Amino acid sequence: MYKFYIGLLDNSEEEILLPVNPEEINVTQSGNTETYNIYQFGEVVSSGDRKLLKISISSFFPLEEAPFVMTNNLEHPSVYVNKIYSWKQSNKILTFKVTGGYYPIDRLWMIEDFEITEKAGEVGDIYYTMSLTEYREFKARRITLSNNNGKMAYTKDYQGARPVTKVIPKTYIVKKGDTLWKIAKLQLGNGNLYNKIAQINNIKNPNLIYSGQKLKIPQNEVRL
Image (cartoon, rainbow, N blue to C red; front, side, top):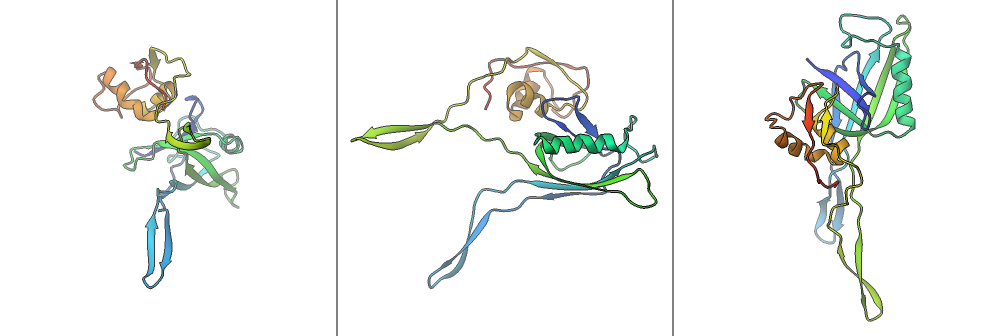
């Protein structure tokens, strides 16, 4: 059964289970191409790095319980709307994931647009359309320069990792809505280190963890 979760990256308690599943998810992955006209040859195309992923979903926040409502703790529609608005206005980095799905969208996002509508005859229900844009982290660059006959010249980029700035706990208790990727991101600074946590805890399937599970966190990992 599909379930849709959206919440803050750095706070597992600040997560919303969307009460009514969207009918569809629109995922857009655009290319980054440019076209050129070459003299006496014609038009050619050059491709660059991919652009950010974008997701669009539409559904509604119901005022009352119904068989199609996914959560057992339905809030007033205004609670959901105000929370999402606050995340957008504060430019929060969010997680958005779908359980029971096949497309790998469990990554970081920011809210691009959030539009709400109230319809006549459905008093209290709030319909919405939300657009998310992928958030991709980037590394700090340190450029080494050399003095060549009084002129500063570029030599190379610094390829090393940034030093650990966060105290990494030895253990972590899994909370509702956690994934190994999310835990690795919070505790090690890099979600791609989830396999390190899986290995040290003998977890064969990284997608199968449960609330209350005590995990050992690898020490001396670098934050990339």
